[in-house]
Image (cartoon, rainbow, N blue to C red; front, side):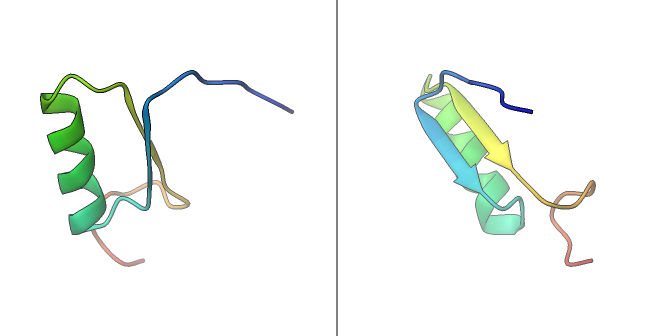
Amino acid sequence: MSTEIKTQVVVLGAGPAGYSAAFRCADLGLETVIVERYSTLGVFV
């Protein structure tokens, strides 16, 4: 399965630093996508 997503920023990992960076980019008006392997954000599973 292949999906194409047009974005300006890709953040790999949604730990504390990743989601902080993603929110900041979004606040600046950048199209932002977070790629996370787990279904929960901000914690190590």
